[in-house]
Image (cartoon, rainbow, N blue to C red; front, side, top):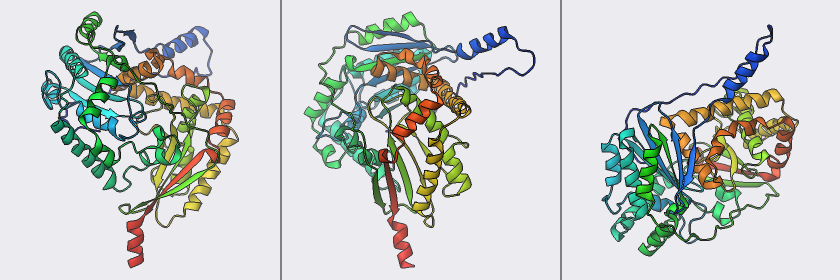
Length: 473
């Protein structure tokens, strides 16, 4: 969910770390060693600890600008919402802005905006998150406000009924009444996955949304919106000891909850290709998406898939882009990646690597698949170290942009994600090294297992509106 907020000036902090190769003139061992040190010297400052109630706290100081970010991540997302309450995790994200003990309905938003800040919240596969970006001298106010709504919400029938209507309208506007609505980010998991937790409609069935009651909301809040199910990161210009005191003061006395057993969200190995067609009366031309189940997170193959993604779909030099856009002219834009609702780092459970594009009605779907197969056959023969090095450069560039952009919001995101899922936010400083371990042999092994046709799901959008118009003409 995206709130429409008063905008303030935003800037991106670009961190340029350039690994330079020596020219062929006289080699200098000392200079080479110094260059290597420069390349690896950038580290995100991380201080990690836990309160007695289980709240995970990550502090990352950055004096670049007089701003601060407060990000609170709760370990509850689409995957582990109640089975008879689809869309409940998303519904509850809305409820968090309806008032708390000391802040009335929508006053949280007003508090941030009137103090010169911006805010947002979203529901993802494995977490629900909230953040505020404010002038650093307003940091204590934001910590107080986040603790106030973690302590307790204004759970009333009026608020629930209102937000049920808001969410249902959001589904209608963003999915049901939009061409390609939900394609492929919402659709593909339902087709490619078999485990209910990964395959149900994340936005929620409208009947399930209507069935939610006050008891459901109260139980959900007391269970999942507790300090022992959350992580908070503070990034920006602040005094570390002062922030520690504030966090202890406002969050330290909040009670932990009794968390339920973690549901089994594993996916079985896919053994045969799946193909589906979605009729879309609002689409004006066909579209196609292809998805493959990812390796388990943090495995060597997982990092290899990150580089395969760069080689195949990211950037103008990507192989599928070159084939489908430049050589064949089937489409003007191939989009794709790992985790359409975030990035390849901020999720926990099973994930799909996917890409999609629209194409002209005159283009044959079979011709498209033949061209894709040509690319996949070629890459399965092996990749060079040069291709891997190029992929690492693209990956590193994107990573550093994320870490520095929007006042460091990407940094706050990864710190909370790694704390929630790995109990180790310092992983943020080892990401690049993990990609450097990937070899051509590992790439080939990963392609053989994870990019096999029997691990693939193909979803095609059928533009009914165009078909009807063609029939009339």
